[in-house]
Image (tube, rainbow, N blue to C red; front, side, top):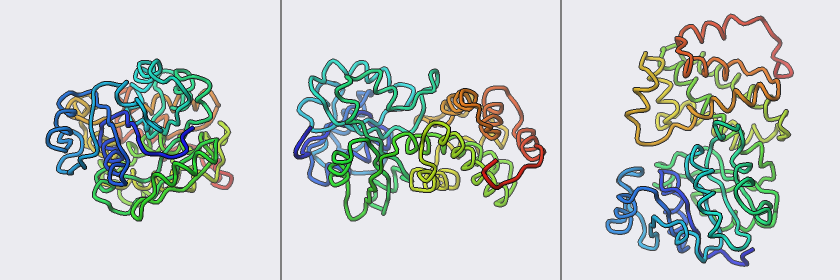
Length: 340
């Protein structure tokens, strides 16, 4: 493991990957950013901007882009993984042959693999050497890339099983405008970051139907209850979900106008079809795919997750948004105590 952190490879030049690269470069680290799109690589290296995914944000000159995975990780002290969840396995599979020794990995992807319902660190364990597994970390919390890239105050959580390594990367990431808290609950931090995207779709539906602030607050609260139930069943610490990677990210994504997932939900609530919405989007709304994975997990662990069930019905069974809300409201009476 590195004694000092001087060079970082960032895999994925979407808004969040680019914003993190900018942040690390401004701290004085040498940053190599991998992008799939050749026009993105050219724009970053020639005009120091990413007009496709992070428009109108100047990027520092010590941030360079590449379309070569081997160049992105060669000689690095650590890797930040920030690709969409549905291509994570493929990218890691291509990357694995170029890693000759244990290398710290910080996963900044907020999603669950759609077909297997595996968390991102579980996908990483499948594709990367067992000697690296203890060096996996996850970064999550309420963090819109556009605000973060403008140096607006942001606080997140970094979780990993190797506490010394987490502390080292916590120090490498922190600045006066970016506060990073350390944690060990890798499962809980990932679940909070992934499932809040699904709840944001549902909150967007509420807003698209113009059902009011009472309804949105209820959706967020009951959504948190579902996340906690599943997290506890999967071995997470329930307290994690009251932190930045849980309720912090949930509230931001369910209420913030910059949320892609919330925006998709609003348009669904207003009557647009999912296919048409996604066809016009450049960036990924992770909640659309994660919804399916969440339903698989709910059934696997026999956890009651009615919001997850209804948003899946809206997304994939052509159920009307208004009918989904009605069915949620007309469920049998229950006790709130104990998150039942």
